Structure formats: C-alpha cells, structure tokens
Length: 114
Length: 113
Image 1 (cartoon, chains in turn green, cyan):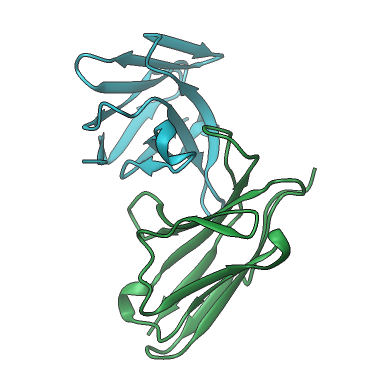
Image 2 (image 1 turned 135 degrees about the horizontal axis):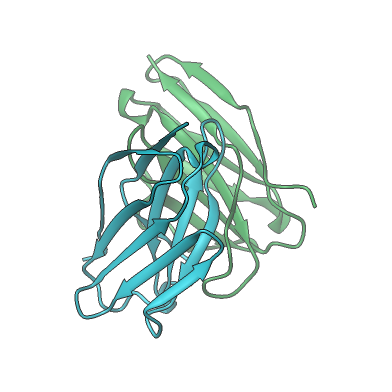
C-alpha cells in the first residue's frame, strides 16, 4: 500500500513570498490533516478535512494560510505571504473516517523562510 | 486546556536498558492516548496506543502505563536497541473532535551500542 505522498520535500523562500505544498493521501482515506511541526516541538494541527469539507481549522492562521481539498483526494496548503516564524516542517496525514483511527503521516515538507 | 506535557526532552540509554518517557495531560475528556515514533526526515508513525479504561498495554518491547487519577501516562521501552533511537511523541485526543491529536513536545531518545 502506498503511503502519504508530499511534495516538495524542501523549500526555501524569502519572507513575504508565497509557497504551496501538495499532499496525496492514502487511497480510500476520507480524512486528511495538515500539521505544522516547528523544530523541537510536536506537530500542531492546522486543518482537518473530511472528504471535501473542513472539520477543524481553528488553529489555521487564516490571514496568511489557506488550504483546499479538491474532489476529496489531493490537498494543497498555501502560505501567502510567508513570515520567518513559518519555518517548519509541514506534515500531511490521512486516516479512515471515524474517531481514533490511525493517522498515517507523509514525510513532510521542510520550509525555510529567510 | 488541551495541553500535553512530555518529559524528558532528551534521553540517552545503553543498549539493553529501559527507556522511560512520561506525559501528563490536563483535559479529563481525553480518551485515547497514542505514542508516535519519528525518525529524522520521516513523518511520525503510530507505535502503540491506550484508552483510559486499562492501566497497561504491552506490545513486544513497548509498554504504556496509564494512571487516570494522576492524569499521567508513560512509555517504557524494554531492552532498548540502537534502532530505537528516534524522537517519541505522546499524544491525546477525544471523541468530540474526531481524530484531532494534541501532541507533547517530544523526547529525543539515543540508545548507545
């Protein structure tokens, strides 16, 4: 079974630039998550989708971050404009529908904002 | 409060020793407590999980001990091996929010040969 795919793996940008990350979840997984993992910290949920709909985006900085999940499969997370404090690893995870189903994480995209 | 506090921040043990990582939570509504293992350059992967209706769960060399009254749980790695060297995260979630995970800060474990 293929795992969660993410691209790019690394990205370096200047502050105030825009960046987008892509995620392809495990086939059949209706729930998709984006987490932000700052160096030395645990992952923090940014947004959770179930199929096309947003379940939880309470910790998403909506003034600069946006995410979409078209057709209930792939998802894109965008930052516009980026700030220095956005430097982090952005992890995508997916799971089957239902509470406490195992979340499978992708390898992440490491973003450096200069 | 939805915080999960984890300690120690880093841990060094000798091969064959026991590694112990502790977590404490505040929200008594949490009802599922997974542990994730993360290797450099990889995403976290589920290691073992427990619900608060049991006090202990063992899978191979990995054991979770759970103390509901103290709101604490811990991961024990028996016979630690160099291949166990990784960062370990405890997490917690509760039914009302589906599968949203609140992670601890992480423990970097190094097992010396």
